[in-house]
Length: 110
Image (cartoon, rainbow, N blue to C red; front, side, top):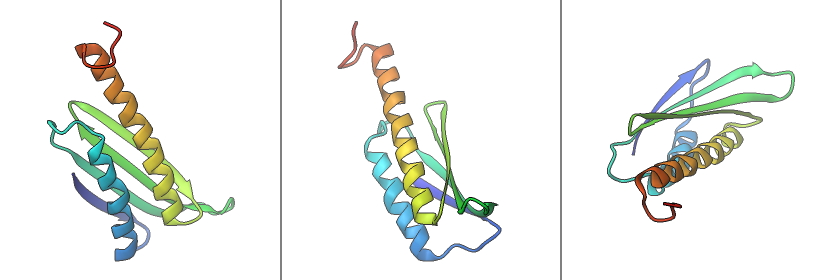
């Protein structure tokens, strides 16, 4: 999976980029392999500063004519990345199950 990083309001260290790449590369194992995958990850800071959740991570994955998107806030970039990874994984599994049931693949009720 090709991952592009974008940042707003603050530079991001290489360790955070490596952490995010490691988390999101895991997603390519559960996505259908026949589609080219690209992910756009945006990391930013500063929106929910009163609640302490000021670090934002947003991911957009384009696959098979479908856009999968998740956005979360955390107290650190790592926490925001973890929350987004969980959310997008849930969406991918739902997407796979819908495709499987429509095509009559394994696990369908057809």
